[in-house]
Length: 443
Image (cartoon, rainbow, N blue to C red; front, side):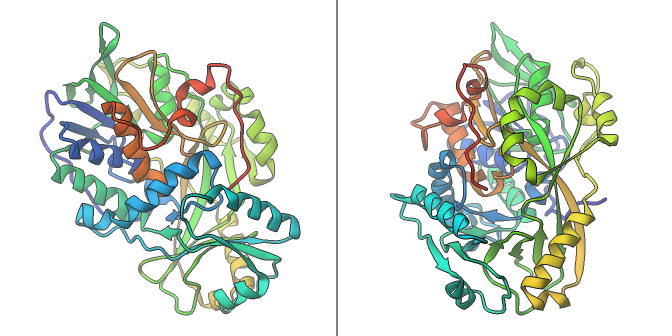
């Protein structure tokens, strides 16, 4: 099943013998980190096993939101919104970013109270967000037949084009001197006296002083090869897009039966806001205890299945020689089959809510694997056991919008600058230092 069309980024031909920092992974997190580091004058090499932005960074919904986030992410997301405002000018390219507002509908008085309580997390950030009555929602979003108690509306939230953003940021990093290597998997890291000394790629070694692993759903496998326990699983989300459609809502909307975003081309991205598939794989048993709180909290939105993915991952070696092809070279792009049951149900709910979508023509379906952590909060952290090694992953479906700020924070940590925000909540060691790992309700 082919994924969405992504603006192509052609990799550089020459492999540098040395640089200051190697970034592993060409999604929005890796590209943003590379851009930040290159702008600071460091010699940066970004290595991507497939193509820039070809996995979840181009398959997500395209929401750039601070609303309904885990409170631990709010300071970083407030910074991200400011970065997005100037990203097109900074990169010299179109990312499709627009502050068009996001609305989370509420079906009951209980929902209204919970959303209002969440809204207090924005106090002090100068972010416009307010509660709407059902009448105010109808006035704000004409043409709706949604039966609701009200909604949380955050006009400061925005949207962007996932198929454009990571490529734009990667090209901007190259403009600043970064080397961008595609079809170039990193097989592993090398150390000297216990600290990072370089990496081994499928095209040869690169000497460096620091490495950032931003490998999305592949990060746990890579880290485990070098004795780093990174609890991470994959969740499948399915998406469809329509051809251009006139008369639909301008705002991005989450409702019980659907989630939609207007696209730059006038079509819509449509998904189910609460239906995700979790494949039972060997790692499911390895990390079962770590993810138990998340399972208890989110079980209504998860569908578990035992299918071919179990065998696929069982066959993947967790210990490979850096002289031979790594697992990353055998699967350049994760391109899972979408659940059309999920997207068709979302479309049916959307048509009930907005009759204009009876005229919608579906152009494409795709699936994407979200990399999740036990507390649904990312890891943006140095690795204590290997000085010079860093990880930025596990964004749990929240990575696209927060990506530019996550890249800045990761660059701060790598270079020793005062961090953009307090990175304590994102430290890798929270999973091993006895801290209580909490899943805080949000979206």
